[in-house]
Length: 187
Image 1 (spheres, rainbow, N blue to C red):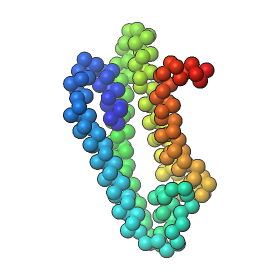
Image 2: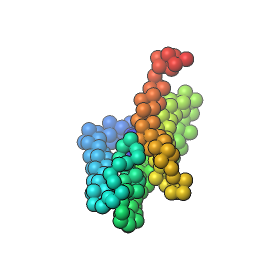
Image 3: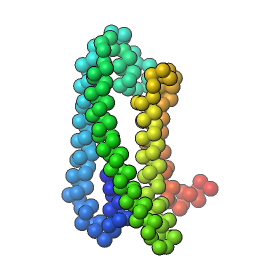
């Protein structure tokens, strides 16, 4: 969300970039991102530790993931899951809406740029971020919103790797594709 806002200010308000994206503003945005992530993680952690486990404590994954822990519970976890899901979805949906609105403004401004070179430069600045966000959002949505009827240990493992490992791994590659030397080396 912060990167989308940074791109928005850089493209739509370039003359005001230094004023809008001051170090104070960056600290506030970083603090907001970290605190919302921390509070969401705290909610999930507290929720997880309050669940009584009666089916052992072995998780059939390579890391402890909430859906896998909930399968070990012997109590009804519906309200706990619903509460945690609502809070997480509110945070994620707010960020998603902000990203979409930022990019609508960006693309509107970019399409008004008269030179093709200017449009290409602006798009090349935004598309790597959109690729990473799309990969992360689509895999996480599939992981957490897939119906339980298609759930299997193997599929759960593949999906969790997709959203937890693949986006951070390809992130540097996607962002470095703007680097001419790397493009030449890959060719």
